[in-house]
Length: 162
Image 1 (tube, rainbow, N blue to C red):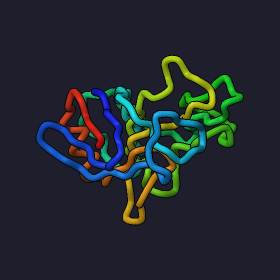
Image 2: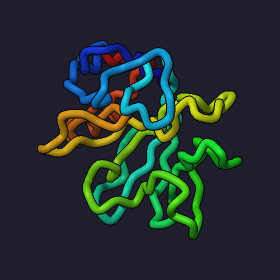
Image 3: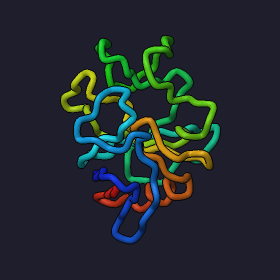
Image 4: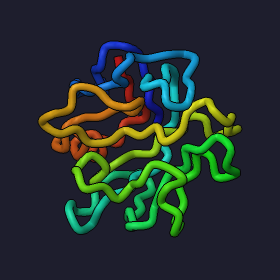
């Protein structure tokens, strides 16, 4: 499964169209860590992570993993763990996946800046949930929970975000 990210905030499969939210400062072909922009391009959807204490295991053909309290995605360009999800006692090295809000109750890890990883080019790019107050993200792509569940069930070969 791949995701095609462009500028207008619409996810399209062959049968469905979903509204989504992009970075606070729009999209870019030249992503930098912390720029609040969503990267543009075609990226694979790697795997799903979810909070079993809040949601049921999603139905999808992507690999699925449980989010644990000590999961982070390292966003420190100086670290050898940059743009990698890991379990750690040092929760300050990156984006915590176990959150108080609902945004990461279900997330899909987007294959952005991961082969090879270029330090400072952006990390923790996810397709994650939105909430009623969401108007933009810090660089990810967000959509409503019901639409995320439907999208995962569809298992399209390509997902396009316009």
